[in-house]
Image 1 (cartoon, rainbow, N blue to C red):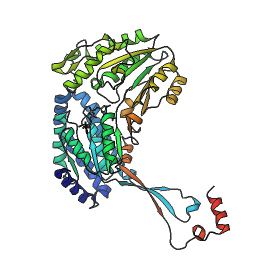
Image 2: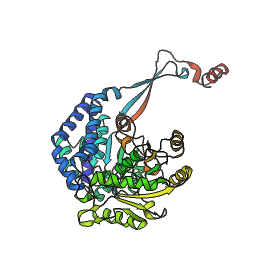
Image 3: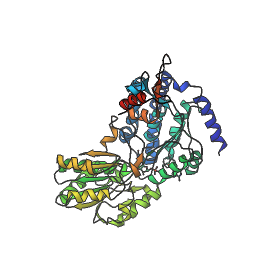
Image 4: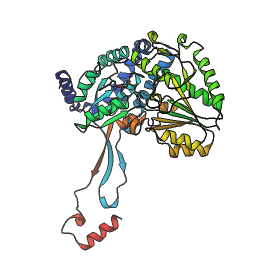
Amino acid sequence: MDTTFSDLLKKQDVFFNSYQTRNIRFRISQLKKLKQSVENNEKLIYNALWSDLRKSEAEAYSSELGLFYNEISLHIRKLKKWSRDKKTFTPLICFPSSGRIQSIPFGRVLIIGAFNFPVQLCLIPLIGAISAGNTAILKPSEQSPETSSAIANIINSTFPDNYIHVIEGDVEVNKKLLKERWDLIFFTGSPRVGKIVMEAASKNLTPVVLELGGKNPALVDENCNLQIAAKRVTWGKFYNVGQSCVAVDYLLIHKNIEKEFLTEVEKNIKFFYTSDPQKSKNYMRIVNDSAVDRITSYLKSGSVYYGGKADENDKYISPTILTDVDPESPLMQDEIFGPVLPVISYSEFDEAISFINKKEKPLVAYLYSSDKKRQKQFLRQVSSGDACINDSVLHFVNHKLPFGGIGNSGMGAGYHGKFTFETFSHKRSVLKTTTLFDLPLRYPPYKKWALKVIRLLLR
Ligand code: NAD
């Protein structure tokens, strides 16, 4: 065990056991402090995101800071209400008691972030940890080092380390952190590392929330608004240069509209990023050289219909459409996490659904169809963390919808909005009763009449 970490965790234990975080006013004041600090350091964050990923200010706001502000303002406004005990109906068998559900903090929480939205994937879970009254250690991804360091500077100068602290470092640091005992681990990353996290957590029966990824299909039915579908698929694929857990991973398109649809996608790519996306301010870069190598190796799995250019020195891969894709190729096994759109055509809707269902359950399944029956069939037959009809990515920003995966794409009840508070709270059932009288019904020796009453009450 690393002594630095275990000392820090002991300090957090002492602070947690001082019960200060149980106070809702304290939590709200800490949320306000966090919001203020981020506001004061926006420039630092924009610069870091540009340096790590060449993320423009517009995208940095819409995909990181805007989501953070939206979430934290909601928590500041609603926390008092969310944190109240919820009274429940009490069945007659429990007469004369009353029941309620309390939201209590888990205790010490570990939050591990991914590189692709390196700000919000650390700070939104942190909002949940604070709201629910936990202490927290954050470990941002080392793959976006400037942002990791910006987060560490902001958070560590805002909070004392016995309450909230950021630890930076590589995979080895993660491994050490995972050896410690936590009360909850909130992990965002790949299914491969998700398994490592879950294995480590199992040693102490620590609950985990795993926000993972997968191959998200976009099924485009011949009965759809083709122009809008093509625009939203293009955006959902190439936003964040495809490095997004909710990105469209591959396209399943009805053969009758394939040609027209791909012409539209091509038009949209040129409109969004110009004919030379490398020069566009709105087109990001791949996180590192090994990711560039991995993604460019996928280009062998089909014919390049559009794009297919790479500049390793600039970590650039152009928006690419691949046709004649081999469904058994690595491209169609792994999550692509880059700007390559494989296109697979189908003739029957059922055939497209069974193609999706042969793979692991995706984080999100997209359907573009104006046919209500097909929409219903899709939702009934395709299992996925989330689903989105006639749009891409948008469900992610609706804080009224819990965001999260299923099976290989993740576990936990999802987060965002109120669900973030719920995810970081344990729901404790509390039953309270009187001692003024004591019904003999339940005690031995059991009487025949008592059993009759119990039978009546427990039917
Ligand atoms: P990753 O799994 O490689 O890394 C995530 C975190 O795990 C990093 O902080 C990293 O330091 C740590 N890590 C890496 N290897 C480790 C090991 N062997 N032991 C312990 N810790 C280790 O993921 P990534 O490349 O940062 O992000 C891409 C993945 O994250 C994709 O699969 C994507 O779909 C997923 N993702 C999911 C969501 C979501 O909300 N569901 C959001 C963003 C990204």
